[in-house]
Amino acid sequence: MQVNLISDTVTRPSKAMLEQMIKAPVGDDVFKEDPSVNALEAKVAQLFGKEAALLFPSGTMANQTAIKLHTNPGDQLICDHYAHVFNYEGGGVSFNSGVSCATIVGERGRITAEQIQARINPKDFYHSPKTALVVLENTTNKGGGACYDPEEIKRIAALCKKENLSLHLDGARVWNAMIATKTTPAFYGEHFDTISVCFSKGLGAPIGSALIGSKEMIDQALRVRKILGGGMRQAGYLAEAASYAIDHHWQETAQDHVKARELGAAVMAIEGVLYLAPVDTNIVIFELASSELEEEFMAYMAQSQIQLISMGSGKLRFVTHRDYTDEQHRYVLSCIQQFKFS
Image (cartoon, rainbow, N blue to C red; front, side, top):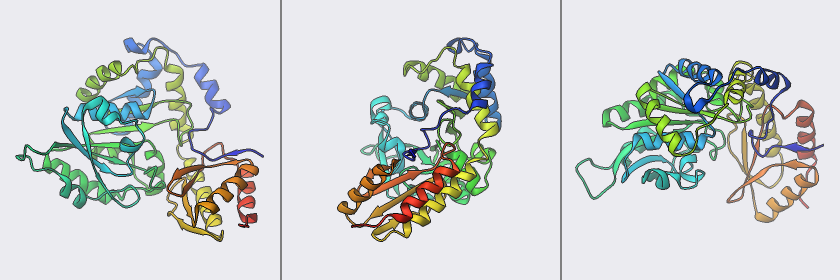
């Protein structure tokens, strides 16, 4: 049995999703004449309580556009040292916007208002970059799917308002965070200036992310997306998949969380596991006591036809998703339970 737990991006459209995609009315979205794209953008904006939204081919492009909108060359943004915008977007912060990152060592990818306050550069000290933007990631990828406490988000939003800083949410997996913390889209719309959301991870759509914000911001984002080459033509087929995923797949991510917790418990029973990050959502990150043990475990998983990923520094990762079936789950649990280091 082959099982892919590298990421929740490996899912494929369900039969019902494909049927809805085929029926999508389409036009040329570069001219804003694709009715399915327009409907998705209106739907997502309304869901989060914002004025407008814009469809992007990737979350990275949506994040990079947001950074461009909120900053000027020479500015600085604040984020956690695990942040996706810092680690996994190809240096786009500097390449696209001429901006530097002031990173904070938070707790599993989460930073606090107090930590942010300490990193804000004095406004009248021209030797330092001007602090312009704070970026939070929820859930945190490299932090093992950790979720922000809603009360901490409120404190950070209040600080940003007081210090006249913009606040962007990298919400690639915010759908998972909302299930885990029982928060609503409107909560995030209230506290963030812009939000990027991904449809091709937990929701299981084949491609696409959206940037959400004020009408003025999204009008500017349209120009930036054009510059970055993100304009798409008959994108309504993709938009219809995303719309279907919101309506039918979102609540089902709770099942992924249950399976992830069970995987975490099985991993912890292995002798030689040094560390297991708390399993809050659908990501399981753990560390073995030595590189030799890691190599042996990875070889065993490969032999068992179970794919996982190494994140470096000895950390291994499973990610559960909607295509990870109950049968596959029982098989993986059995393999983990049978494993013993030589």
